[in-house]
Length: 92
Figure 1 (tube, one colour):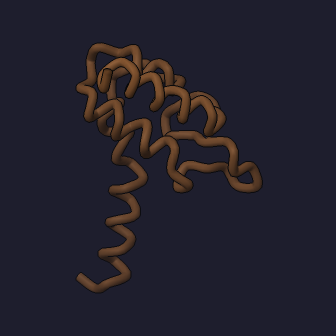
Figure 2 (cartoon, helix red, strand yellow; figure 1 turned 90 degrees about the vertical axis):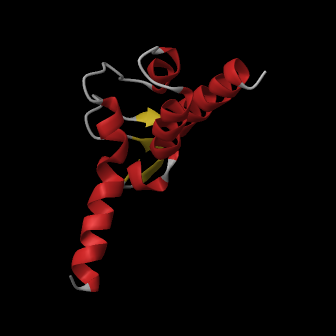
């Protein structure tokens, strides 16, 4: 496998990573991730951290993020607030 093919596969894995964790769940907003009982705290943190990454920012609108499979973009502030709430619940 050449370096280009490997990088393409790695990029694809990163881009679908959180989607795998979300399969079968109705998670439309970051707060839904915090509220669900179907995921471990570590999985919730993984999804929210991915959602916050620049990989999921919208072109020309860097304050918005959209994970594949979610109905609409959300603000980075919504993602940050969900991470804060997750910490409040589980690190207190």
